[in-house]
Amino acid sequence: MIETVIPEEEVPLILKQYNKIALKLVKQQEFERALEALSRSDEILEALQAAGSEVDNHFRLETSHNRSICLQRLGLLEDCAASINHCLEIIKAKKSSIKTVSEKIFLSRYICKSRVRLCAIFSQLKENEKALRYAFKAEKNIRFCLEECLLACKEQIKLNDKISKSSRLRNRFAKQQQYKLLESPHYLQSQNVINQALPYLKVICKQFKTKKIQKVNNVKGIFQAADMEWINNWNIGDVMVIQPYETEGAHGGFGCDQELTKEKLFEKTLLIVVTQFCIATEIRNLIGKNTNYSKKDAYLWHKKAVRNAKMFLPTSSALCIHVNNTFQTNFSKEIQKEKGKRELKPDFGKTLVIHTKTRIDTLNPEQLRSIYRPRSSSTRLNRTILKDDRRALTSLNATISARNKLKQKSENDKEIFVKQALGFDKLFNKEESPNKSLLSTNDKTAELKEHFNTENDINISP
Image 1 (spheres, helix red, strand yellow):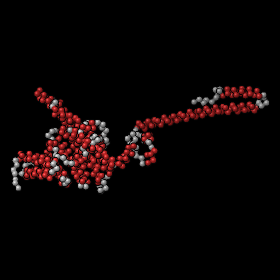
Image 2 (tube, one colour; image 1 turned 180 degrees about the horizontal axis):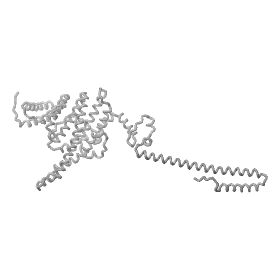
Image 3 (cartoon, helix red, strand yellow; image 1 turned 180 degrees about the vertical axis):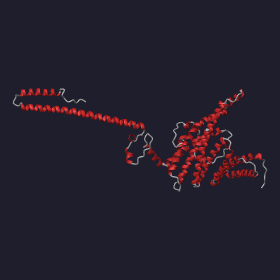
Image 4 (cartoon, helix red, strand yellow; image 1 turned 90 degrees about the horizontal axis):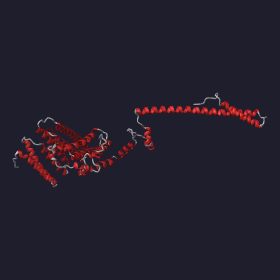
């Protein structure tokens, strides 16, 4: 074995060269030769570590990441999982040296994607419990990543306000330099990126803190997703397949706005949907295997994925279509059951569950609204007033009816008395002539009527 001496200042260049050779061989589908190039890079790193020299963790991470690409392409899933775990260990050791917010956000996103890939690998190996653990961790990572992006936006806006309102610069030259800074293209571009990202991040982070579905109408219009073809064509397989390591983004040399561009934000949104979909899939695979998970848990996680996909992604995107179709296929009974409950939900917001089928068939929404009403204090007061009014009206109607009956009875009594009087006259005046009898009868009738119309009559006025 021939030992070669490499100057320490040339080591980074040689490591970069080996990684470039490996990636070139990967593109040419020569994965075994790529592994040989990466093994030489490992030898250099081990020699530096044995000599007590400082080794940049970035080179170790890049080498291990590129090795996992080759192992995945060769179908060596267990070795690939070990290589990805080695990358995560390097990042864990690297956390103490993180200096910029952009690097922190980048590494959180990288950890999330790595754990999603581990979830896919262990799912293929039928180790669903391990796969589910990595899926839960990945979902937690991407939420942390988005919250850090929101915090970075707010901090940057505060800093920009301080710069624009600063009165510490006294001399004229310094003020001119300040105005040149505020009018520079880089500063204006950074401001534009932050102002676009802030409302989007506020909405998406609010979704993590509440179980209610937020009503947002223009969230898809914050960024024009229609002009980005890669979003419509992006699917779950794209995150499962390991891509070359993002060297430039690892150092955060371009500032925090690099992680706030619309492409990066949509990538984070895609990862939210993917992680929730993975959790639902692995829970569904674990049903009936002596676990505490049920189909309802899988249904709720899959429902979250569908909700976020429809809310933040174009409906024509491949990911949104795939997540929604699998949801309809795997949980058709649960969806129909929820639709039935939603149809029986009155307008006042209280869920009504009726267990008798005959009542469900006979009651329509209008009948339900008339039966089940809100029980607020104002409603109860209005009902009390209405009942009192109805009672008073009923009592008044009864009084008027009684008076009318009494009046009618009095009229009937008059007619009966008149007829009886006429009958007695006919009885005692039988021998008189008919004309005289008729005349006397008419006079008697008039006399009786006049008698009943005097002031001695019964007062029946209401």
